[in-house]
Image (cartoon, rainbow, N blue to C red; front, side, top):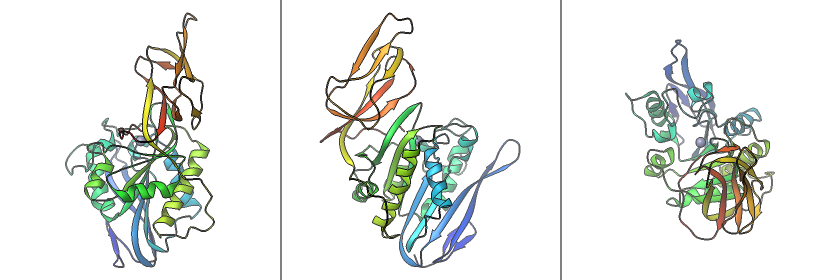
Length: 325
Ligand SMILES: [Zn+2]
């Protein structure tokens, strides 16, 4: 680790910082798209942490978190290194879309392919030139499709360091989720690289509280890893650890109004929202299934049967759910 780090043709020595542009592919109009990668190295050896935003191109809170951290010059490692990629899926960002223009969810394309689709090639280049240097990572996301997440960390129970990073981050909620096939976290797990996912807010929206909580959490993880000192960081209580989470889904289509807010404590049978038809004929409460916490709320009023409405989290033991952000 005290040897020079080589990313593409850029050499980053101890104590140095550099910007590397990772070329991917040209747009149909000929403009070359490259991914900006900011590399900061401390003077002494230590772990390399990746801070990554915008894997889904419409999930903007993470992009803003990393923009502010760069702007405020918050990433100055004493030891080890920090690689900051504020916007991985530049193509999706340009289209204000989760996916790449070929309709792929980038988080189902890992570890990528050299001669595959646009998304596959992007992931391949990223894994080859950036992720190969990484010892641990924080991946910043938001809820998708009008679903707002209360700030929460998802980690891999299979890697103890992943849980330790989750605890250091101190989001209001933390829980383990299953490794999705061909996701970044599964690919990282196979390389024994712990990755935690910060899920906060919703796509195509900024949420100030989610952004500032994300910045403080990233700083706490850097302090936990010994990359930076922890003095002067904002205080935050330990995360509430959830053993199980559950979406309450619409029993029929109609108009949904939430009656609770993200982060709120609810008791069994409490109405968490109301489902009505658009013509004033029907209006029914949607009730909490058990005592728990509101960790996600759907903000789209028009819902179909089966659509997720409110996600509750429960303390205690349970089965790890699948990620959905
Ligand atoms: Zn996402």
